[in-house]
Image (cartoon, rainbow, N blue to C red):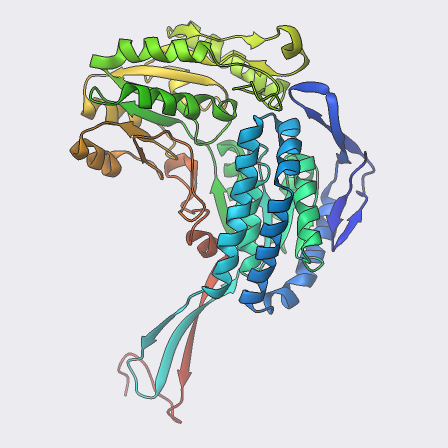
Length: 492
């Protein structure tokens, strides 16, 4: 089936006439359609549509824009299972996780929809008589949204929903690995009554679509989730135009397990955090830091449980771990495993591309655990984005915190302990945007800020009330009803 771009409320052909195919990473014989390989000409059409729509859309009362979000949430709810099935086929995560991905978008629609009645400003007394001072929020303008493949419904919802609620218009470039999910989401937006030009969808690669979008002179903001390398480039394009850029990038997230921890609880959290979504989450646990006294005991239990995880097609209810997204990712993970062995880490399980039986049809990699990892090793420092867990030993709490913070990233983190004092110290001392106590590193809730520090981002936060901050500008207003010129700062 051949799909099209969505520009100015219509499904239209790309200017290039070229296409690419979306495959199921668990079974590459399963195709999800052909999609336009667009270029800068398509970006131009989409931006012009967003530009034309902005004036009228920004004048729609925010509560009315919120009502549209509620309708989108209702439609997502009705189509949840259908969307989850398509997502599992297109990017590989197991079906229960795909349902969770769609549920995040549903939750976001309802949460952000309610913000239509809460676009709060501030009032403050004036220093002068017969004068009022207030501030209000205004939309940024035309927003370019660039999203990854690992959460192909949730992450676009995190960005697009607050953007349009605030009165902005959007041009969206989804990942080339999950174009069908993007199409299905936009079909729901269209059916919900979204006016033409408010959200525009352009399929294609980073060089042909992403860069022209980020550089376009009429784009007032870029919101990007993806690799740190690409994020840096987008930041530079934004800086050249002096526009707002929101970046959500990599992670090398630690779980700390202290000697007094509930080890069985910790193992459940580690398995879910390290191997959920096949390790392809920016919040995945890729570093496990274990206090000396329970190091061997925890490793023995963890390796036993990991070896029992079942690889397979995510549509199969018996599957625990699905494929990685494509062959390039599979080969990249294999190279990191080779580096780990070469640099002296101890491979305890996994470490191989899985090719047995039906697994040969897709891009599978065995859940992998390395022990005796040190901070100098590549697998400790660099984001692998796959089912690879690096385990290192800590002498005590202070050493564990030092190891956790020994990274250029700072998105998510976790500590398992029964010591309330150490738990509260960790809340302050771990350098990350998110910290979990006695839980894994994944599982964000939409009504709280999401984002990180260091090379994970550039200071912005998605979700929660902070989502509105990203997509609005403050405007300050002075109303002088004194009938004469009043000069501020005490000037007579």
